[in-house]
Length: 155
Ligand code: RTP
Ligand code: MG
Image (tube, rainbow, N blue to C red; front, side):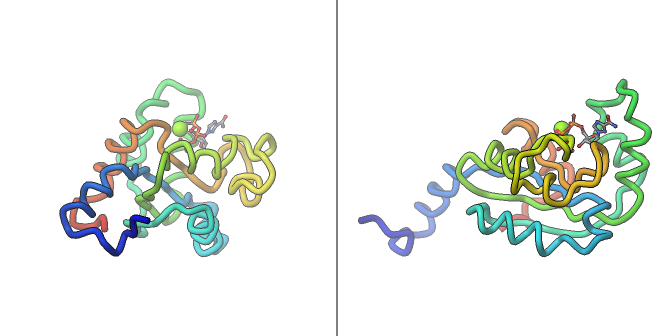
């Protein structure tokens, strides 16, 4: 049986390439209610590894850039005001198929429609204050991780 302990440095890097990365944000509503630990516990129990993490407060320009895909939506201004209303925790998660796996753990955008035991069902307040963000594709995960993290901050 192959064990991870038998991998040397180069083959470890090769193995890591098979593991995907995604960007997670613990949003202001969840940070305010001291839910960082509870959310991190769910992430880790579901076999996703936190390989980068920091707390910060977005400027309005940061929020507008990050959510620019929604710039023509009616909720854009509210979304940017909400995302700048307090500190957030940005995280890089690693795991097999982690983009879809984390989206499943997050649950539907509107907590009312979210499945049982998902983060948004457990902790979301409303369609806007829905506690977490997760990248929606591998391509966007790379863009979003680069938005917040330098290489030396990901382990
Ligand atoms: P996210 O990007 O934050 O992971 O959420 P998502 O993919 O599930 O939902 P998306 O359609 O990308 O919307 C981005 C965020 O905008 C807020 N929102 N407000 N008032 C509204 O109708 C409304 N709809 C969306 C939410 O915070 C949502 O997560
Ligand atoms: Mg989205």
